[in-house]
Image (cartoon, rainbow, N blue to C red; front, side, top):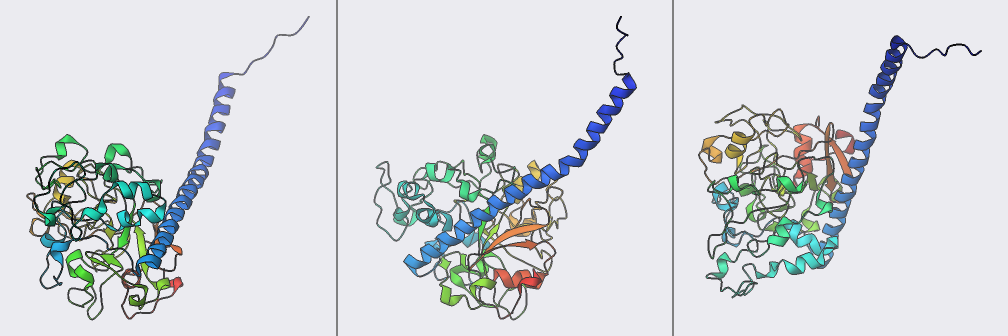
Length: 394
């Protein structure tokens, strides 16, 4: 006669479950770390592709692409320009660096469909749909390219950034359309909405967009007295390799940028050539390094957060921006606290722990720690300063 079978007691079962829970808790960080390593590797690969595309562009055009084309800003200097004249997203700006690089990123078909050659400087009497354009100087590549601006391209996307998805396209929510700052079709006032996100910005230099307009390299308004402040791509300029007197291994071409945390947040809009959208990376003594979290909270909030045209509206939707690592300067004097049109600069940011990936001019990709000194970071993002840096400084 067989003896009675003995099963697990409740206490034994609970002990086994507790052991399994402990093992999972020990393994989870390792799994998450491995996943982040894979995401970061993809991000590095994307930046290498952008660096290669940039050099292929140089081989054909003898210089880097314009950060963004703004014909009305030609002739302006850091003395005569202002944020309102060079960084207003409601003006009919032309193709930015990302659009110009599309043929060199295996996106020739998208580029061909974008009608970028119809921007000022090339005769364009009619739009793609046959409508006569009232003024060639207002021919906006953006209104003609809803497919282009809404396309999510993997080469522009860092998988570590969970905010970069199609539900968070810039100006995709109908509640965002009545803020008074939406880009519009100059023919009929139709709003240009649904801009896809990206995670990389061309490096325009160590100060605001208007201070480097047309490749200005003067020292006025530079964060450090007596230094230049120009990067490699910005408003109406893309430099030649000969103009990079620091050497390509000491000069950043592209840096990571985080996608906006709300549909009104301009950050990471890859086809829009504005500071914070696809241009970066200003540095200041009060906003010194990548991933800075300076922010004073509600308006005026003028303390070193990213200077963006949509800041005040973003803060209204997402009041905990600093806690999210995305501080946004809401000072009404500088950034239109009541809906004014202004946009100056955006800092390099990422969701990688401890820093951002940066593509240097020699094609290499470096991980720049948040702890980098202000002066070293400034030297990396400026193309013609006089400082010598070494890799062990970042």
